[in-house]
Image 1 (cartoon, rainbow, N blue to C red):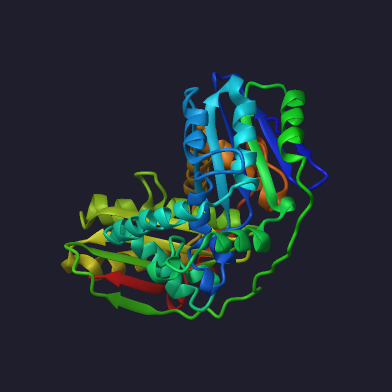
Image 2 (image 1 turned 90 degrees about the vertical axis):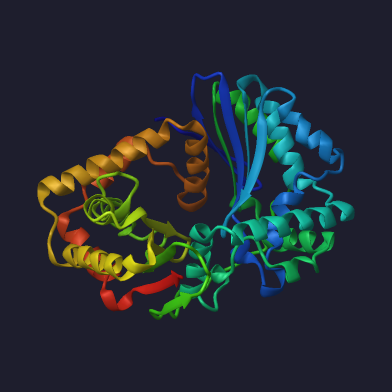
Length: 406
């Protein structure tokens, strides 16, 4: 893969991957999210994402919603704890249309007061819908548990009592406090010459002045293992167990990704799936997930099961974790794990929308995008001893926290 990059004087970066396709993908990723909120602002970043489509200085909401759809494309956005992202998919000849629209809604949104009130009602429904999904809600509440007292503990959607207080000025204040032009990346995949793309990039994103209000995050977290049981009245018991883990830039991040994939990744042959589902039939869903942030991370093992099988599942999981701490992976097993992870990465890269978003994130964090050959080199360099050390550091039984929904 050949990635092309360009940087504007205001610090906004561009990364492009040329692809001969009828369809193109483009996104603007901004390095600010829900963790940048103060306690009083909880939920404002997510409300801001919704309000980006409600009008600009020159467009009404209907014009924004029809701009890409009228030519067969689509535009959407999402909020995470560390990013707000606007992204579009379209026929390749509409690259200019997509970039101009994303620039307009990112920098010129007007946040009509009437639309703010209307959109808050929609988010209330979104929050209530989320509360009806225990298999999703439990992940947020686990992060609330392990990051207690830190902004990462707060969920993205917000809380109804806080949302009711927000006005258009609340959105403008959040932008002024957190939008940094040198923390923005435009990511593109499509059949367009890089010279033309740079021209469009400079035209639509080069007109804004450099801005960086500055921010910093705490360098350490006072993590203590804990165990909570919540009575949710669910038919199935839901359980998460896990620990805090390495951040984006940790030298051991890739080793933990590999170990996580081996234990409970999407493959049907993951250790936990084989033991709990295939061999014992205790659960339909058993997953392991490694989540990274700019200054920390966490690893979680989730399963849903009958109430009578919870302790059996936990016992089997702890047994598997103990094996990873006590035994080096054999060369053949480690080789299979590496090939499986690399295969998943290669398959994912064929999804150009997913690749475009990965490129944006990589540029924000590392200011580069590794080629597949470079990723392969790094993964193949991981040793069994490194995996053993990571397992002992992350999966020590006394460090694990638990959250159970009964």
